[in-house]
Length: 233
Image (cartoon, rainbow, N blue to C red; front, top):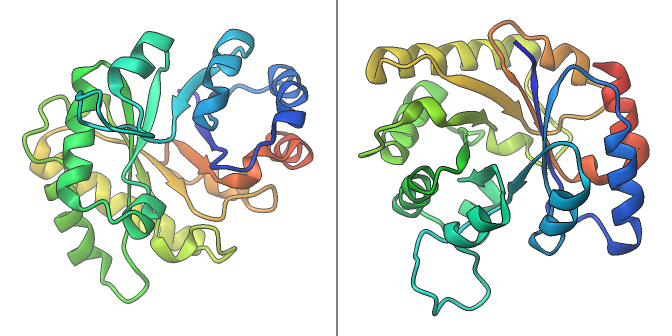
């Protein structure tokens, strides 16, 4: 099975670099399945010109059109977007998206046939064996089709910091997550890792046994860095 590589650009790609980036990514030689998640303003450009699956970085679960500055599942589905990132720590911390909001976004995405990339992880002062089950149970409340979710383990302390857990620690936690979901929800999950992934560590992380792939943050919009990343896989 091919490894999944999710490129979460955040707000980092500028318009002047847009089409050179698309040309570069189209010429990448890889056996990985790539999902590019650009800013909303670039979704159509990637959908029309890129060879890879496209994801949105956020959605609003509410279909009421009176939500200034938001984007709905109907809108991104009509564009042809395949994936959406839900529950990212930056949304949780900076925009106060609580567990109920993440749960409603997850249900809305699945009902719209959009594949969710569900982010979660413990804080540095938390025991993952206590924190992660509580998070997952809240996020997965009343969710029926868990098979279509990609679970993105992202410890909060590793996001955008350059500090990441050891390979052994990542394997320990993702093995725990896999067993927890299998035991409680009777589904074998697809789990990827995110948090300070770059060209210097991609090879050892993506090859962790049981891991389905990785999610790479803002650095994934850097043409030279992304070329190094795929060269090192």
